[in-house]
Image 1 (cartoon, rainbow, N blue to C red):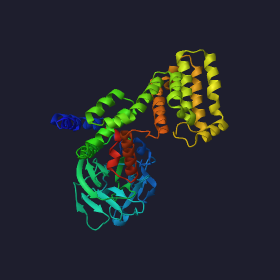
Image 2 (cartoon, rainbow, N blue to C red):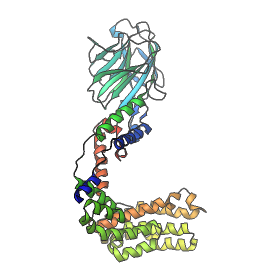
Image 3 (cartoon, helix red, strand yellow):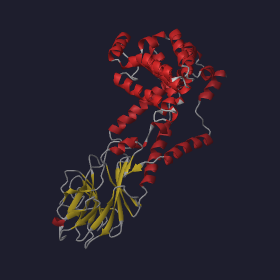
Image 4 (cartoon, rainbow, N blue to C red):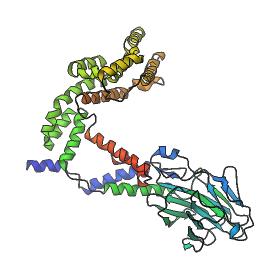
Length: 471
């Protein structure tokens, strides 16, 4: 009976109300996230910094087209009598493919011209521009004069949507989540047009209609179609597929993951209670002594008692101070900060900096210390340049009447103490040949690494998922 009770406490909630609330949390997070900027849809902001289309290229077009300086307006200036008078133009940059879920742009038909022969779509760099879009290999388009789709051929188009002309707004979206392309007319999604596109593609338009004119929107202005809502729908679909996936029900793995996290971070009382309830007392007892000692010294750092923490280290974990220069540096700079914050005399503070911190600017001293210690365990301020940068910031606190309100005021915050305590905790574990991160933290790191690799592999769904969504 006792064993069954433990398993019930570890079992994931099955209450429909709890599951509904759980799903609502995902939906709320999804709806609160701004996804699309400049037509590029991704939850990874750094990916939006890649070169993206901002206008049609005046140097990458057929002769019968004229572009404005900004590349946002295109006019047909040819005779428009037959197919040889057709002309197309590409954008200045291709659509990014890495870290991107969707790309969208719109054109407004200012004047359809005498025939209304206008095409909107995508094409590759190698496509010749003396024909309408969609009539060449690696070219895909939706035409306004007949409402047909053309995919790499000018012989026969496929029925798709309504015709379009003057004052209509036509949008084109490359959805790399579903690997489809769809078009919109006046804000309405017309449905999938093409699928299985790949490679580097450019937005393109073409005309064979005297006096034809269009204006493009690559995200500088509000789109008529709600691409943000569509991106959120795609994102929610991906999150749903993740949350609906059944996980292994090995409660020992789950128990060890939770207990490892609690013990790693020194939550001793919670860890003890959890270990007892989960039947993992042996695992708890094995790491109990180290956890309690680490908690004492780290709590001192969090409380600002650096002298006490260093005395405790010398008594319980002497190897940390002997072998890890970077830990000594962190603690001594924190001591310097605590002296400033506590209002110690400037003479005393300056003397401490001169006596204890100046040596960290001596490259010979650092090299000797690292050689004596062997291979560095932590990659924290492990070069003289990094030491110098940190010391410059720390020393600058002396110049302000109220250091907490200075540009370097973040150094005086409680969060700085917590960072130092966390790095000290990892350093102690490393000297004990224990993992520097808990199982849960390693799981998260592995997940982030996989997600990063998927983004490099041009995986559309990965561009709409962040590790934070799963927490």
